[in-house]
Length: 315
Image (cartoon, rainbow, N blue to C red; front, side, top):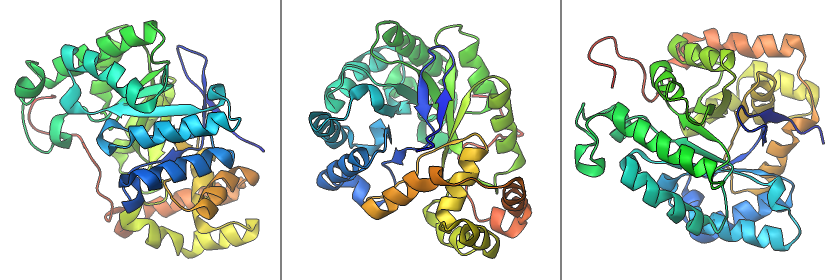
């Protein structure tokens, strides 16, 4: 009830604004736990699954989707997002990855594929030749562009419905848009009230160009979720709406225009996350939460991947 969807440019598809993340917790790396988690989520009414090649859980997710469909959940209602990791970039690698990914998920198509990171090793190491050994590319840009062209062809063939990026900077997004292949429909990034100005600039650029924002760590991530959950301002707003602090943060993100993908293996927590649709925050509530982002001490606790560098080439 009250579910929100985000329209995706280039296809007209609607992406559910709340999903289930399947990364970065102990139960995300155990096949039976992943299977049970995804099946519970789908049977409780959740419809958006976020996974990735790096998470190594395509197969149990595929089994859970198949079981849910046998129990009456329509494939047309399920939105599956996955990501190709940088080590699989390049023409030949990407061509091999697409059918392998579909076989692992036991699906005829996926709804959204993202380039997981624009650089190998999250950009912390390497240089212009970092893709040479794995992917045969002369530069990171060449590798991203080759991969985008392969995935765009898969989209034309109906194997992928939408394409997007994750953890990409503005110039990296624009390089892909300049190819005039499949549109960049989504950017997945860390987003919450404490994002630095450069991350907010990326978000604003995406908004201005019709690119939907999908947020990870919208509850603060494993490192800071506890701190966010006990903030007096958030708790007070939650009490007013009969909601938990985490539900308030998810609702803030949804009303900010984001798609959220909180991860949990607990069916009760799944229900709480889905119920973030069941109430609305006032303009005053929204402003109070946004204002929390001015807390520099809290903001300093977050680590962001792939920030811009003032020196060196754009790779």
